[in-house]
Image (cartoon, rainbow, N blue to C red; front, side):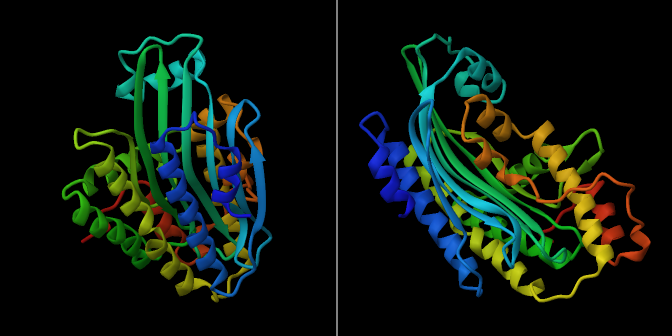
Length: 325
């Protein structure tokens, strides 16, 4: 059963046309991404469907575990609606200008739909990738608002500059075609967001990040922009996978990958707003924590002198780079 069939069973009239249209798009995108992975010669991921127990709707998780290509990860779509509690409202107000002048009550409602994916490959030559594209709506008292958010970022374990350039240039070209001049803003936003302040280093080589997207151009134009960003994900990542998929790797490289996984875990638990909101809204915990790698090590940092491309990675993580020149 695909995601749209599932949501047609659980949607009701309370979901707006904006939410339904966005859900239809991300469900199609989920199928496209997973099919591209399967077309590389790998098995189909395990499908899990779930119902949101604290409101309306649910989701579909296509989960990878001990997959030939992906050690752990998944491509998730959700469409949920529930009470926007004062605690949830206050946790979001600081980051969303559309909520700044609203006054929460005990009758407020939120609706949200989106796609969220994290893929942690087995081969340390293949970088981890994260992407999500979402639409959020809120009814606060007599007021209503909506906004888009999302982005995509790359977390390599061994630095191949050509990979980082390809990833960034794909989004740069798509963004310049749709909304010229925005790439640098969203690239810097990504660098700032995925920064581990307690380590003084980036999680990876970045990408793009945007939130609170609700412009004067209106829903249709913003929706078009978000679809453009989602549509180029396959182009941004699959060529990198194909480039390194069959490369041999050493035990030292695998241990280095596990060590770098610890930084991924730290970011997601300490800094990631999506993880915090998902848990606060009592979403499906297993889907929320799907982003965690299977193995992470906090043992003594391996010697990078013995690992080709590891020292180069450490250097760029200390200072965000320009990858489009």
